[in-house]
Amino acid sequence: MSQGVLLRSPDKVIEGKAKSAKLPVIVMADIRGPWATERVLIVEPKTAVPWELVPAAWHLLERWDAAAPLWRYGVLAADLGTAEERKRTQALVHDLRIPVYACELLFVRNSQAGQELVRIWQDECAHGDVRLAFVRALYQVKPLFCALPRSWLADVEQRSHQDARTMASLARVQGPALSKVEIAPGRWVRCRPGEEERVKEQFARLTRRHHE
Image (cartoon, rainbow, N blue to C red):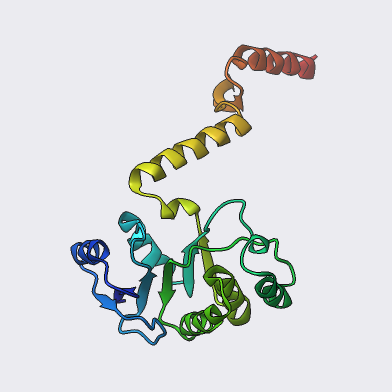
């Protein structure tokens, strides 16, 4: 499947990176489809594109109609736009306690649902905030949409630090890795580090009781 990059206005950095990745670039203010390629990255100028992750996004579009990262953790649709626009959004989604997406980095499949998503999004942008407009478009079209981690918006170094923090947080929640201990020939169990001898002793006592 072919893929390309669509820019609303020129950006020499993005165009140069896309060329290095052997991706054609089209610069056009109106981003509505259909497009010349089967998969397209619609990106706003000055956006930090995670080029090393782009191949993974193309793979996702084999199943999904569109994909975009979460914009900011802790920011909901209820926090954006004017009162009138929030009311318009709530009429569609019913509950504004939902996340919003970084539509400045939008991967879209050149499918009917993908084209319709972008078309309605652009129409809804006339009412104000682009992110609330995108939420309304999602709820109207209901495409197969993949929400990407917010780390896709960071550069490589930041993304590495974020991943490290995430792993550290998981380790604190989950505790230390379990140890593997042999309680009988060919029989193994897992336990917390430092509890290996106690586990073997408990198994030995249970075995003795069973045979008494």
